[in-house]
Length: 414
Image (cartoon, rainbow, N blue to C red; front, side, top):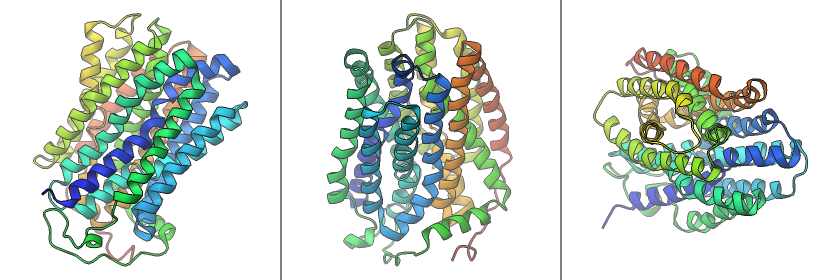
């Protein structure tokens, strides 16, 4: 019989899919909201940027809260918050409401159960196969995109944007019973050792979650590897969530491509993202993480420089090649980044990774806002694609100079 850790990982996978459903919406709703309410793309992009920034800034605190209250309680609260934000948006009539519901509520909810959740599950339940499990859980977000993007695109096109928001809310709520009944916080709760390791007693709940999170940050920012990891991951977020996920559909639509066709291409990215991320986890268990990161960023940068030339009213073979290529690289950066955090920061790595993820989302937020403004000012998204390609080249160089020597934080956070 498989080890219980694999069942916990499966529940986490489904949970991340349910929470990631909302990430399918922003790119689909930019044009409908602009046409319905007359809001500028910059305003809509600002709401998306709030969501992405809070997604990242919440993550490190969520990791500490999971140490204090347990994963189940934190994740159930997070899913409920996402559902509330998505449902309330159905009745919004002003842009400030978009920023409150999409930005604040959904950002806090999704940030509480994303990468920090995956890192916590991996660290507690696995000793062996950590890279592989990290890749699988990271791929859950792409799987959610694969499931919900075509569905939400069809709903938006045939029934409007409000039913799509309700669909996302229901997806989050459906997962709640599975989390409450099947997720367990620690292997010791069921009398087991972590997969590939020896039995360890469950540690006592840690109080002062917020203080510990900030203390870890203050310790980490005094080390060079943190800034390199945060900088490269900020560029990762800028070139994926901030740019591709938010503006690929409206950019393709600007060139005459139907929304459903563009959304289907983005969903195909999700298919190959699953393959690429799991493969990256496998590679991370076997090769040096720094070199993997450099290769991933360099390839991504080259592909983005070619994208503006591939935009057309219909889908053609070069665009399909780009989608496959980009999909394999979408979040392949996560397993080696998490591995480097674990190598450098030990048992504080989940919280440090939470802060690195915060930089990822801040980068995404900046580009989500800048992309909308660029479209309002220049009438095109091309300048943002080129800029992101150049940033990826810088990230490749930064990855290579991350030092190998671990940086101990022990004693600073206890």
